Amino acid sequence: MEAADHTDVLPIGRKIEKVRRLCGITQTELGVLLSVSKQAVSKMEQAKQMDDERLHAIAKALKLTTDSIKNFNEDAAFNIIANAYYNHASSVKYEFNPIEKILQLYDEKIVLYERMLKEKEALIEKLIQQQSK
Image 1: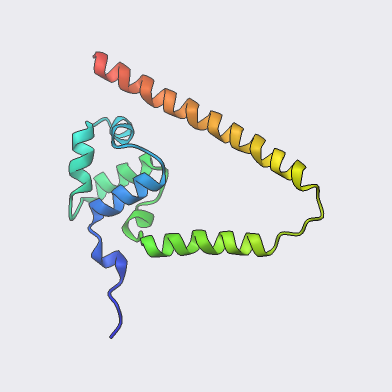
Image 2 (image 1 turned 90 degrees about the vertical axis):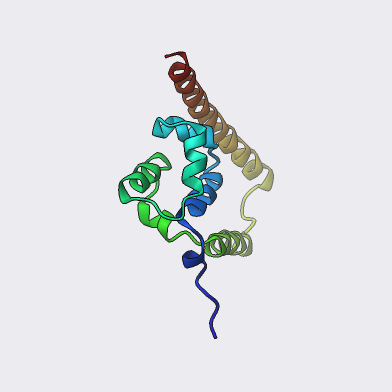
């Protein structure tokens, strides 16, 4: 007997929560993007089913497709990450200066971190504006 498909077991709200967390977004931030409260996001994440219009809005806020949320499978996501890491690590050839590569990666992470900070600041500013209304 085969094990049940994990995508069928998780309710849609739980999938939304897991995807939101993987995207590094809090309930408050998602609420700002959807123009709803944190409590409304929490309630959505507890839902067993959801209408397509609401799911589409959530997917758009997370910059994903509705199918990627509907078909989310935590085991598959971890396998993809693990395989990508394994394949990358096994194909490393040291035909470069490792220190230069480390510095390059460090610079890329700084740029990414600064971009994420700007996005978070924009979300916080939007939240502050909404609360001051």
